[in-house]
Each structure stands twice: as C-alpha cells, then as structure tokens.
Length: 532
Image (cartoon, rainbow, N blue to C red; front, side, top):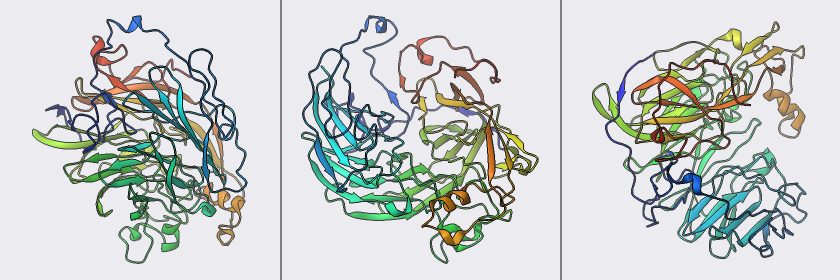
C-alpha cells in the first residue's frame, strides 16, 4: 500500500453559483450535488449555530404520485393543480408510489430562484419554497421497470431533465411543467431501469442507467435543446480490439459484463473530464466464466473513470475492485479537491468506495496516490497491491463450508452521497457496518442460451458462486452510521458522527459540522454501539 501525508493547500474552487455559464445566484442548488465538485458544501452563513434553534416549521406539503394526485397538506398550502400527463404506455403499469399514494423521495431536490424541483419515479413537481404550494406536477405513464427510486433532476436554463424507470430521458419546461421532448436511453426489453440524476455540462446532458442482469453499462450525452444523442461510451469492451478486452475471458463475457452507471459523477472544467464510477461485473458473484484467471480483472467494472465531455473518449481509469465477486459497485460520487501531495500541489479526486476502501487519485492523469481502509469491519482483502488496489481473498468468496464477509453486498457505503468541507478538510461518509455469511449450494449448471427470454435463468446466472453454483446468503447485520476523515492530514483515521439518512450535506457553522465545535480526533473507530 502507498502511504503518504497530505497537507491542504487551498480549498477546491468552482465559479460562484454552480454550473458554468448559467449565471445562477450563489444560493442556488441546480444540480445533484449543488455544483460539479460533488462536495455538497454550501457557503451560506445566515443560519448558524447561534440562531438555528430559533427556526420553526413554516409549512408541510404532502405530495401524491400519479394522475389524480390532488396534493393536500396538514396545514398551509392548498391542493395543487391537476397533473400534466406524459409517457408512451397505452396501459400504464400500476405502481404504488408512482401512480398513486405517497412517493419515495430519495433524490436531490433542486432549488433555483425560490422554486424547489422534486422528483420521484415517474413524477416531478415544482414547489414554491416560500409557502409550499405546488406550481405544477408532471406524471409519466410508465411501461414498468424497477421503481426503486429517482436520484433527482438536472437543469439547463429554463429546462429540466429527469429519467424514468422505463428508460426515457424527459425534458420539461421548468416554468410550466409541460413536456418538451422525451428520448429512449436504453433497451427496456433488456431489463435496464433508469434512476440516476442527469448532469448538464455545457451543451451536454450526461445520462447513465442501471441493470441488475447481464447487460453492458454505458454513459451517454444528449443535446439539451433537441435531445439528440451526441456520443455513447460503453464501460465494457463491445468489439474485438476494444481496450480492456484482454481482461475478460471472452468477448461474449465482456458484452454481458455490467459496469452500469447509476450515480452522477463530478466534472473538472480545467481538463473537461467527467469523472464517474461504474458498477459491478455480471454475473455478480462468480468469476468462473467472466474472469477465470488472475489477469482477468474485468475492465472497466468497479472503476473510477474519466471521459472527455466533448468527445466521450476515455481519459483514464482506476479500478477499485479488480475481478469483483461481491457486488461492490464503485459508483460512489468522486469528490474533487486541490491539495499538497508529497510536497507538490496536486489536483485530486477521492472516493469512499462500496468495498470499504478509500482512494485518492490525481484527477488529471488518474494516477493512484493513496489507499486507506475506512471500514474496520472489512475483511475481504488479503493486501493492497502496488497499484493501490485491494487484493481479494478467495477464502472470502462463497464456498461449500461458507464464509463470513464484510461488508455485505450492500457495501460499506452505497448510494448515499458523501460531503466534503473545504474549510476543515473533512470528508463525511455514510458507513454501513455489516457482514454476511454465504455458502455455495448444490446446483452446478445454468443455461446461457436462455438469455434474454428467461428472466429466471438470467437471474440465476447473476447469483452463481465461484464453484458455478448459486450462492446462499445469510445477512448478519445491517447497521448504518456516518463517519468522517481528513484526506489532507490523516486519511487513515476515521471517526463516527451522528446517524443520518440520504447522505450528509455540509454547511459552514451549522451544528453537526466540524466547524461548529471543537472536534477531538480519536483513533480509528471500532465496531461498537452503532445506529440502526
């Protein structure tokens, strides 16, 4: 493992507002993480530890999904206007939380010019931030798909963009909620489902999607005005001669290799690089068919990847979990910051990855700078190789005798975004302290020829163990807490904070932030009393 001490030089800085060229007020939150750096840090100071106790509830708005929403409230704003209907399904699938009832709000809420823009699967709202009344509600008639959540919308001028579970990119007029256009972004018959928040960079709308089965991952760029496809970058090799093909057992294995892009990335205006993470290889729990040898690392799965935003061409990559067999995506948000490394100023990106390890990279070249374990419970790796990558312990794969592995397949962290405070140099991460026991069952074969017509067979393929048989999983615990570290002074020391859902968000001077109190730096925490 490479070790080093980092000293903070200057906080990472982006143009005031958030998005380059849009001229928005500095109190806006117009994209998934507030700005391109993925720091989730607000510089606003009007509310701090001296006056936060005087805040009180101003209004409550109950949002209802579907065409007959009739939004009501416990007190305050009146019911909202009728829903604006879009979509392609002649007979939309009935889905609680999407066609009726209370939606699951698990994405970032945008705020621009006093308007809140809220999304859930198949639904989008504009809400007045002052009194909570609904300005408009848009509902998409869905063909179906996995309605696990929606990470939020993107904004470009007066236009909004969001994805639907049945794989459409939809553009709305932000003032009226009327649909401008919709474009299909993935093959619904291949069981793709789309949850991520698009990211607008210049004249590019960057879009990812998801799939838990054996389909290839990709990132796409669309024209924000017309919706035309500009470029498409596959995260696995798709043709003979493609880079990375030698890391797969065969071209067929690579083409069905996964590496989905389902969490938004960060953008470096100086290098024009969009930096994002990719998902796990498929089948998820076996290396037998896709990577039987030590050299078969399955690029570019479980990787931090940088592509040129104008061309869609690969700039660099770093793989956090080579030849993954535990479903540990590396889709977690890469956070951008500047600092000193080995006595020299560097432009860096850092990721607390799902596998329980923390990585610092040079964001201009992808050079590995630092690896540190942030989950003390993580026990799956034997060591860290010269490239800074954890080396998988085969004894922690599924075996006939069984094994106890941490983290579980949900990872040491998951979709909950991190937050970085440039004033204190602290990175905050939601940590899941979990283990699971798994063993190989007796079934020994599966039928690739059944793909894609048989969902059952394909799902069985994705759960195969290294022996070729399905893995039976027994979860041991699933507990969550927030932890933080200083990547610039002591990246190996992580200490616990209060629990929270949805990921931390930093604001200078607020209770719960390191700036609001004297923070004692303890030794790295150990598993003890944890929040459920």
